[in-house]
Image 1 (cartoon, rainbow, N blue to C red):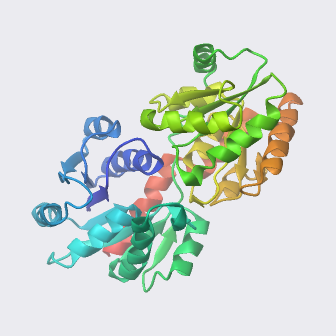
Image 2: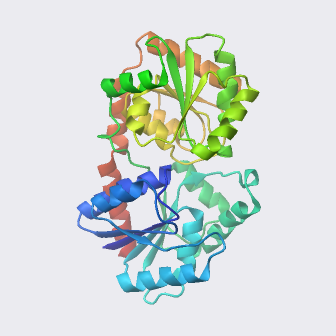
Image 3: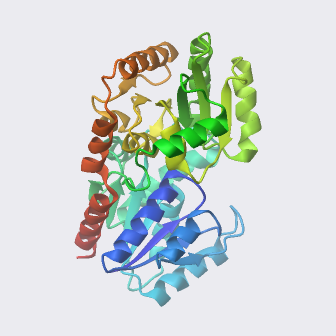
Length: 373
């Protein structure tokens, strides 16, 4: 198949990491794979180029730069004779559905849905409209791939219509994300973490859905014991002042390390004792949870998206927004760690068996082949 993946950019993010993982694997399986982006740049570009995946820059000038951008995408699809256009996230899905109407013969169109139960009211007015328009245009798609069971329920509730949908969870690069004692010592030394400190990491961009204030509220209660340490990984440099100011409101700004965005996420996860996923809403398949478990690191997660499915009985699941439950979950998990009842090998095997990148690539290939016919 000639497959084109469409997304807004290749900046650091869960969806972008999945594209950078999936595209080379599909190419390795014999398909002609390219990635078209609205905006150029991002750390995943080099990963894709080295693997032989072509990047098409659509040179979008900004939010309201529309017509020239759409025309370039149409010309690209026609020139490349694309068999299947696989878009990711609402904006790309809307753009792909719009352009498809003006391409003859049109490629098969696949909507990629990566979230569940988004609280659009937490964002600007345009975000809510994007989700409504995406649902209205869903009938133009030839298939929908959702990365979580909760996401499948969500698109049904949102009114996706007449389009076959399949759940394919995210994949994990289990070679990159693996136990690494050397990396653990190196990163802990970089962050000034002592051997007996219990380091809890919150791995997420700074966004209303990610629950940083819930994490800081839990840290406030735990910080009475000096052995608890905390780190935020994945916050863009320009958002760190906001995150630090929020931590200051809870009096924990000096107990939290703000590590920014990192390209060595496997090493950073190995440095942690516990990953805390405090999301309030919107998650489909939280990558950081599966990647942490692949590194042998246990997780406390909120019951949002398919987080509970990922951790199974090997972690702790608490209600979203419940600080007291989150604190208890962290304390309970620490006790299990110190008692030796959590085995890193079991955590890793759970991910390797269910969510390996190769397994997800095969599932995606079969789904696209079925859609193309």
